[in-house]
Length: 106
Image 1: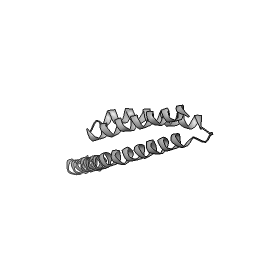
Image 2 (image 1 turned 90 degrees about the vertical axis):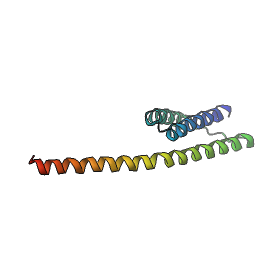
Image 3 (image 1 turned 135 degrees about the vertical axis):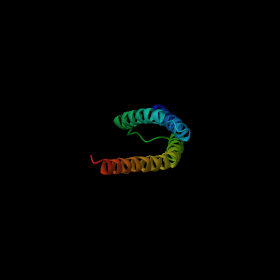
Image 4 (image 1 turned 180 degrees about the vertical axis):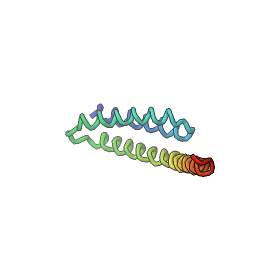
């Protein structure tokens, strides 16, 4: 069971780093950490612990899952406005290109 908790602690640590990267607008770092997170989750799925945890392990696991979910929600709070802004910029650039083509006869 210690290995299960270690896996969740590692995942929670990565999510915390992702939250920090998102808060600081470090998008490349966020993407790199997201890859690490995916690898950790896949490793955890592959192990698929079947044994029932004792109460202390279960409570620690629940606390870690809550932290992971809270960090994930906070990451979305940072990334969603940035993604919306990026979409507006790209849309605006696309409109500008269409106008240039229309008026330049391309």
